[in-house]
Each structure stands twice: as C-alpha cells, then as structure tokens.
Length: 252
Image 1 (cartoon, rainbow, N blue to C red):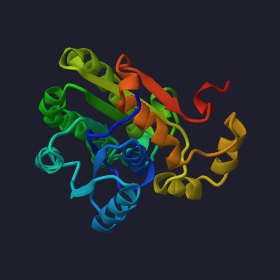
Image 2: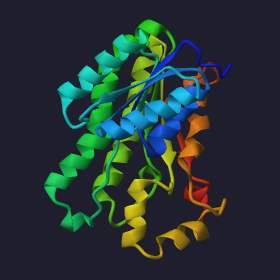
Image 3: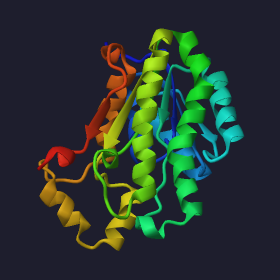
Image 4: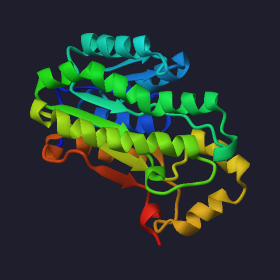
C-alpha cells in the first residue's frame, strides 16, 4: 500500500532542508526522484544521497521565479523519468519584516517563489499526472497559514495562498485521478530558520517551551508524510492540510 516502485517524483527545492526530507521519503518508498534547485553542488550532493538509498535520481537547475524555467523543468523531469506521477511544490523563501516596512520588491519575490511557482509547476505537470492515473501533488505550506507573526507578512500571505490553492486544485482535479494536499511545517531546523534564530535570540527556547514534543523539527520528519501522501494508502485523501509541527500549532 505504501510502495512507490515504478512511480516518478519531482521535488522543487529538493536539494536540502525539508525538500530533501520529502525526496528521501519518496526514494525510500521506491520512487524515482528528480530534485530541482538553483545550486549545482547541492543538487549533485542530493542526487548522490538518494542514489545511495537505491533510488533512480536526477537533478535539474531551475529558477522558480521564471515561468519558462519552471515549465522546462517539468518537461525535462518527465522525459528523463519516463513520466511524472508525483509533484512536490516545496521551493520557498522568506524575507522577514513588519507589514508597514515590507518592500514591494520583497513581497513579490516571496509570493513568486512560494505561491506562484507552485501554480505554474502544477499546471505544467497536470497532463503528466493525469496520464499516469495515480497523480499526486504535495504542496509545502506553513503553520503560518494558521496563525500570524508580526515579521512574516509576505511569507504568511504566500503560505495561506498555498492552502487555498491546494483546495481548489483538489476539487478541480479529483476527476482526473489526482489528489492534492498540503503539509504545514512548524519550526524546523533548516538553513532558513537558522537566520531567524540568529536574529531572535530567544526563539530557540521559545519554540521548545511551546512545543508539546519539546524539540525542533528535523527534515527527516517529512519523509513519512511524503511517502504516505504519494502512496495508494492516501488515495481517498485530498484537499487537506496536515500540520507537521510537533503539536506547536494546537498548543493553547
């Protein structure tokens, strides 16, 4: 039920952090995996790690703020793997600032990376996902689609948009045999959050105090949810948002 042997997956931002966690989970379940990212060296390292797990793995350089680059990424991935069954829209960025101080240039960069790129990639992948008969789209959202923080105006807006985009795609594409779900990460130990901890000296302890599980998340925590949502075990699950946050978002 959880076996992904014979299926092909594309993970944007899959060369590190949560994205590589998604990619490892899919690879361990038997899928062929293409990771897409800007950094050639990180792409190569990710492919080596996935290959060591026994997976057929590839990489593609992509600029997720450029529509042509995204569409070419999907086409190339499908050609290399002989099809495309699973799309993980994970690529993301954050430029922190209070709402009254957000520069429009930063606003557009965050929304283009976190939200628009997923729409374009999903559009481009749709014919491939439909043709395979077991299409899966997994979007990476955030706990900040549930609540707000004062310095995440652009990021929170983009991730709230990802949740609503997921629901719309789920309803539209169910008839095509495609499920679409979104994962909501909490505070995860990645390069993106390292900068936040440097800027906010109490953040580390604040997270531990608020989290019922009493630890920060790790990219490995996303291996299982990726394999599950991509598998036949989740065939009747679509349009849902699944927090992966150690209980942070539900702790009163």
